[in-house]
Length: 382
Image (cartoon, rainbow, N blue to C red):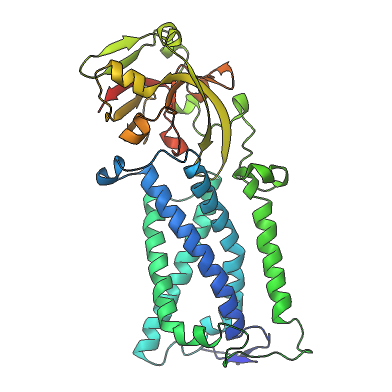
């Protein structure tokens, strides 16, 4: 199969590869569409857990306690796996992308414009998401809102593309479809070999990066941005005390203020004298890494109840950090009243290090790491 193309000037260019055909593109498109669907669904969940709208804040569940760890890990794993699939899909269809003239009718012009949006959004969404896992932001805009908005643009363009191309997709969906091209045995690398190579590439990329999210694959974690076991007290640190401008000197006279109908304050020794509870919960960050740890501290619901909060009380938590997007954190009632939610004082049997939020931090089930507020100075009945 050949695809002759003619550019504005110069001789015709002929693509001789025998696998730039509709059947190959359909098979790769199915796999890529599945990866996009998983990545989009888990990404929307992640966004609403991280930035819940008012109507959803009190409805977000705190169980299963590992829920966010699972969905966010799946989000990052599926996004990384989609990169080689997208590259393979673009390779299969690139002769069509550069066909000349670019369109012959208004309908074809609209179709190609949708494809341009789909390709541009897909490439930028996946590669910017990959850079986010490295916490590298070489652009002047805020990553989270742009990434979220672009995801909707991408999924919309994908649905439009599938709708327009459905007759061709249906014609090449299976090997027995009437439109499927059967390649001769002597035609060089066949479709099965190509797909096996793509599958091997996706598998290699996934196995060597998923260890930051899947503990069982930790030994294969060769290329993931983070090692979940590397860091003070066995946990990585995204935001250090220096970055938050919190120092030991500023904490010398630290006291926790609990605001409510019956407000009170507690020093660190008074907090340690209260009933202590130990839980094993994961820290799960939006960059995809996660790790279980043992946390010891006072239940948040006990602190809220002492301040006059009822059984449905929510909480507002204020950090001592000087500035930051998550300095003030709102906690819905399911989290605030969950017995696993602690104002933690100890990590893995040791007093919290300064980078992990000394003297006190929040640890709650099924929450993004950015909402596990460190250096807590004020807790309010909301």
